[in-house]
Length: 284
Image (cartoon, rainbow, N blue to C red; front, side, top):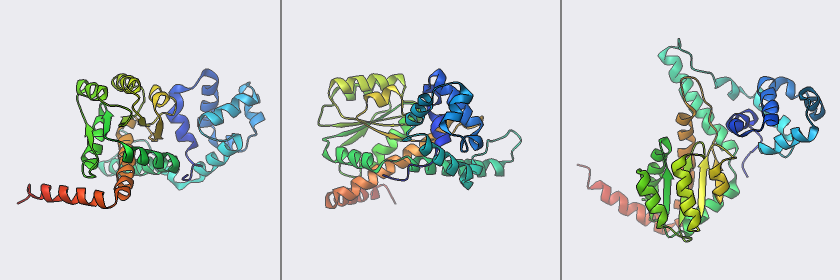
């Protein structure tokens, strides 16, 4: 497993809409007072918020930590990390140069944050599932549909039977023709897009293995997925999180494609060479 000790604040932000009332109390307290929290005991936080110690402990587990101490260590590392300083909001009076720098730095942070939460075991399972599949179909809607199309553009070079549809009707029709020997990769920032939820229901009915790429650990999509790979992205007033999330989604697709190409060895190299020779006909 890759380093998974960072991004406490980012995890809280990205799960914020899924929290219960008591979890929101804890989330807001940590987001507003991170420098205080690292010096608190679990009992002190519980007393200040008038909740049980066990509620705080369960919150830490909910966002992916083994316990309160592990969350504090991650939070402390995040506060003192210089990378925390570059996540500045874009302001109306920022110059073009400043906006340019902030966007580039935000994209860098999105990739670094997403890297920190990757699980090598889950990536290995995903690569193995793709390798064994008769066909791999990528699904996404809205901005994530572009990522699905990019995935198809990459994987078609590997010799693996891959596909992606942009039209929602074609997507659900394609899902209906898949079975347990195939793999469906569903890409969604929220994990609650209506079109993808309908597709996942059809896939489940056909016993198709589902791999989710999403920002939210608690969502309808992750509940239906066999494997979930997560991204982390921040939202600002002028830059929706969907923009930076695509950078993270594309990076995960690149990871899967590269590992598949290495795993396919000679057959992958031959498929890529045939593709290059064919594409060369398009050049003068």
